Amino acid sequence: MANSSRIGKAGESLAAGVLGRLGVHMVEPIATPFKIIKSRRINGQTWYRIKWSDKVSADHTGLLSDGRRVLAEVKTVEHNLRWSDFKTHQPGRLTMNVLGQGISVVVWVHSTGVKVLKWPIDGFKPGKGITPERAEELSISTEAELHGLV
Image 1 (tube, rainbow, N blue to C red):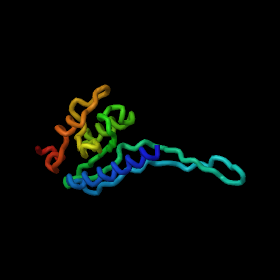
Image 2: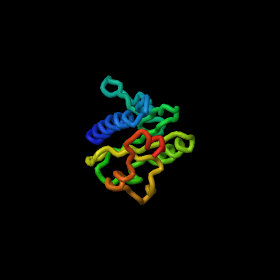
Image 3: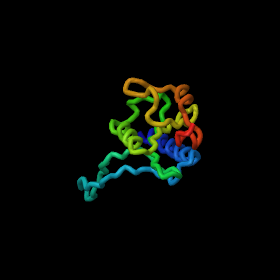
Image 4: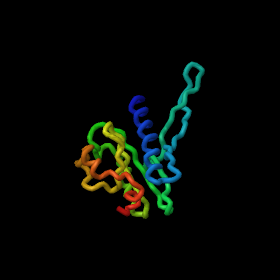
């Protein structure tokens, strides 16, 4: 778990840089809220545990120069990108942002490179994955593509 978390954090850092190069301003990670709960006393020491509270919409948020919100979910996986790589609430949150005139993207960090895929992703649904080759075809690499001008 610790190694997986470390890899995920490295992917999120790469993703933030890529979003900035695409013209997303104020790229900020969305922190998962938590509570620290007093657990018990053992041998005179008080132990605490962390309880994750609310679900967050994605990993990063930012703004385009025209004021639209960008919501970015980062996935650092070596296998094909699968629907099951997303937590159950994430696709709905990405979609809700798009319906609110924002731009949602999935940033897939893979050994073949970092791919930025606009949400909704063509052909991506439960039971249907995306190969790195297909992601390369769909990936956006310019600010104009992010704005939907190309």
